[in-house]
Image 1 (cartoon, rainbow, N blue to C red):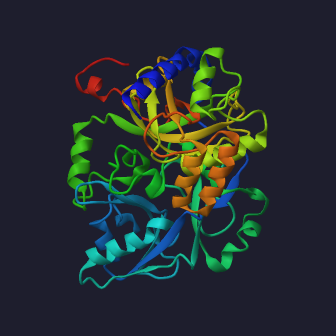
Image 2 (cartoon, rainbow, N blue to C red):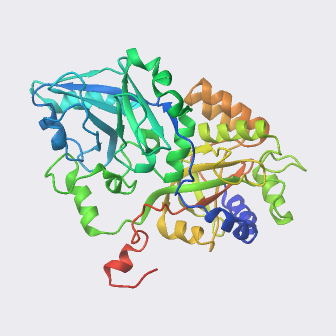
Image 3 (cartoon, rainbow, N blue to C red):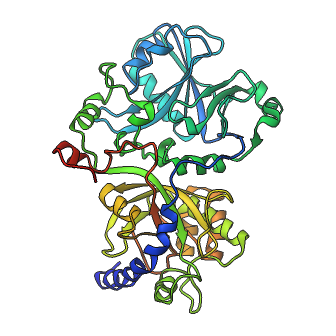
Length: 445
């Protein structure tokens, strides 16, 4: 975009700041402490399973992953999984893994990994093992990853283990293929079948990323994505690949950008008149139209699906007053009927965003406003084609409603605009966001 276009656009979106602050307070009253809900379960088709077999398998993994796997040594199949990350030598995130004792083999473990990244993970492990007598293989056809949440005890079945990250994430399972087809019968009336998107909405409300799109492989610092506080890093286990940079960041004690939950609200017909020019310019571009759908729940769902598919990972989050980028959206999913109030335009979503903490906490307190914009419908459909036909179809649906997605690059004419409202999770340590103040002996925020 030209500098003159940027300046005019900044002046337009600056009007959103005053208009949105009072509305934003109603959103900020939500914490990520989840309301009581009925138990649900879902298969996670975004996850795959690798197997490591050999008497040195766990000893080898101890030097590769960020967490201590010694609790799995000699443990039976009932042992809870270990959550960890595989890093580059410079400490950047590559893969997230849940390591389980094998249910049948004594000298083997199973690794729950990102399905799209499993081939790269397999190649990396085979490269690192050198001549060790360890066999790595993809066993995704033999196991399905499942999750169950909204209950204090595991559902019926021998496969369920507590999710090691947060209690609110419930239970996780590696279900043998022979049992996967009847898992619903095994769970019975104790939990209702749900979609992976519903589980994703739960994770986003909690501010937990998963996989190599939400945590960008080769780029993300694991502590910025809260992997350590989610029980994915040990600072006492000794050396592992990437450990030095991880430990340096931890002991320095200051992190200025973090992943956190955000509410996304489409600017719609209920917005004040001052916002309508911005909605017209950044939305469909048609006189009389506003960004976002009308009351139709179908159009809201289609539009938000497009936002998730195309305007998810990588879209710039900008400060409404200055127009400067303060971070990136890492994912978005339609808010369910029980997840909070709908936006005035008829659509709202939960997301996760990697944000500068000072800007995010100012916005969470109502002192500023953040926005994210999607590209135009045609651009979104074209971008989606690069991601696959399913994404292209959802992008086309979003283009029809005016809620469409795009990659990073900030606000641009012809783009629908979403209000981004950060939410501080209840599980965050109190000092996060004011580490420098705490380190210097300052008082509370």
